[in-house]
Amino acid sequence: MNAVIVGAGGQLGRALRREFPQAVALDRAALDVTDAAAVRAYVWAGVDVVLNAAAWTAVDAAEDPANHAAVRAANVDAVGHLAEAADEHGAALVHLSSEYVFDGTHAGPIPEDLPPSPLSVYGRSKADGDARATAVERHWLVRTTWVVGEGGNFVRTMAGLADRGISPTVVDDQIGRLTSAADLAAGIRHLVESRAPYGTYNLTGDGEPASWADVAAAVFTARGRSADDVTRVSTADYFAGKTGMAPRPLNSLLRLTKIQNAGFRPREWRAGLCDYLATDA
View (cartoon, rainbow, N blue to C red):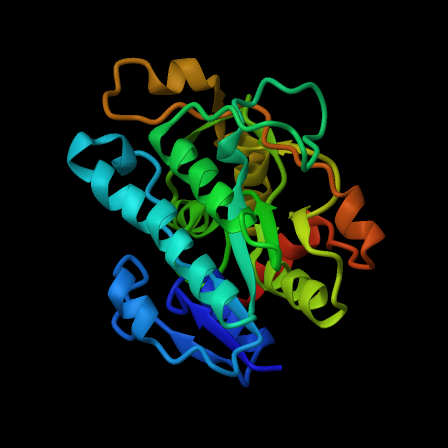
């Protein structure tokens, strides 16, 4: 199978490179997917699957009006460029989505077919990008949450704070599951190699739902600190008086039945966290 990874320099892109070692890996310097002409000019002949790991992911910075055009270019227009190229050349498209396309008010785990209801500029851009990806027949849209991999992320930040003796304040009313970038990439490879039916799949870590404060406490415990060194606070209190912050969905819990029925069993998020802390943070 001939695969091309775009956004190959990010957390997921690096993990995909390990799962698809024979793939052509393109970072932004090699292919700027926001440039329609550049995407059209790329030689897609013979490519079986395009793995799109490129995105604007700075959620709060997306709220700044000065960044709106760039956010849309990366998360909406670029998806359309890649979808058109894949469709024209007979390739399948794998595109990554986020629980930020929802408002977080759904009761219980969120199914794949819940209509989008984004709260933020970032969330709206991801929802609109999803529409571009799903407009072509041959697509796997993979929706995930709370990704940790090689590079800067929440877990790495908490580990650094724990190691330096700092005690953070962390929100305890945003609920979801951590997702290892390595596990996410493995699930994507499963979908592609098993030729699972095209469509949308939720893919996160499995296990008991947790808050960001629970994740932080688990990191602190693993680093030899007390879980009580993490102060818990509501999202409303944490953001009180702060400006330029994107609203967050309180429920980020995604239903995993469909990916499990497709033959992939996501790993329990705490097991993924332990491995990550042992090797990457």
